[in-house]
Length: 231
Length: 231
DNA sequence: GTTTTTGCACTGACCAGTCAGTTCAAAGAA
DNA sequence: TTCTTTGAACTGACTGGTCAGTGCAAAAAC
Image 1 (cartoon, each protein chain N blue to C red):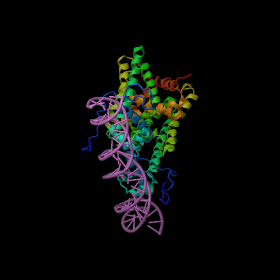
Image 2 (cartoon, rainbow over the protein chains, first blue to last red):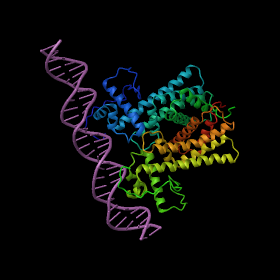
Image 3 (cartoon, chains in turn yellow, brown, red, blue):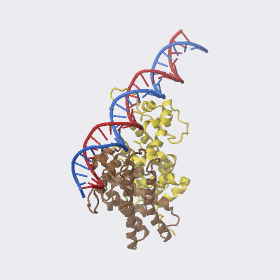
Image 4 (tube, helix red, strand yellow):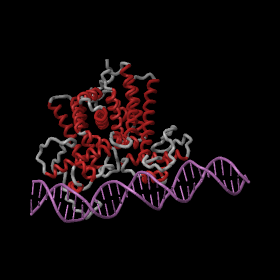
């Protein structure tokens, strides 16, 4: 944007369904991808861990390139700038997350489960996602509440995407009489996100040996108010 | 650390009860502080907002000095380095927070309240803290889950301090038979922190016009499992 | 007279972004 | 089959700028 005379061949990304399958640990060689696609993938993987560890500003493009096993120029061949790389990383990751959450809710729906069951399934899906992509989650939490940044708008969109998935279930639950009409949908959704995010990060960071089921049941109990009144 | 020949007169901070009263908006000119103390205070205030907005690496020492209305040299006269300034900021802020949480719990105790009441009071105290020092909270969340950083150890200590305040109440509740012995104290505490943190940040960032009571009641409902089963 | 602050010039390291040149697989020509 | 051409993808040395931290003499505060 600032440089005018350049003609860096930056293709319109965000056009096709650019997957980020295996954002963390590569595998799933499915999906016939071009060479370019593969390079992008490597850059995402490198960037996500580095930025999660050090933060955006503290991570250099040289580092990203080196870890991806690619020349610095390649980064700029594939992304207009460091910020753009980061923004696309965010969008893709959150796309995966919301897809997973909505899928979990719909599955419960199909099985004739209640809305609490749907919420519970979403918690599980959220935990699963975080276990698979811990670095991405770290990065997401860390950047979520920063203001005055270049990718501010992207962040808002992406945040809303996640929260809306939960709010939808809450709204449906209220409409169906399962949830109290007194609940504050927006705040409750935010609180649930925070609950899962922080608990899962604690899990991954400090007691990674525990199973997903284990962690899930602890959060499930909290969700259903089965904390007090134990016998 | 890198520079050896320096003899910057950095006094042993953390010795006295270095308050961070009015970390955000200065007021409360109570507490007879030395001149030095006042300068420190200004630097904390300047740093906390800037770092919350931009992150540590993206914030320059020149900016901090300028916003504090102080010469750059003064920053280095008062703090050994940029990182040290940040670490002390962290320690002081979290000290305030935990004090507030524990005070809330003890107050409930004195009033003969239950442990759920204590938890509820801590949620309120947490919300109050976040409302008073939103920037500090932003900064805390943003840096909490980063690894490989200079102040890593400080961060761990400080995190543990906060969580322990909640875990103590949970443990007491289990011991007293009020909470189910099945609850996972550590994870539940983390989840509660996340719940309050993210909900409060949502509140401050996107609907600051709402009252603390309002937000508190939404979270209180979630804590007590009064979400489902509405009539 | 001692402590603290100021202002400012300076240094050395580091870093985002650039660009002229290289590589190579695939398409086409012979 | 073998040779030639094309251009997308990639490379890495280089540039212009920024920033943490230093040094110090003079002023201000106490």
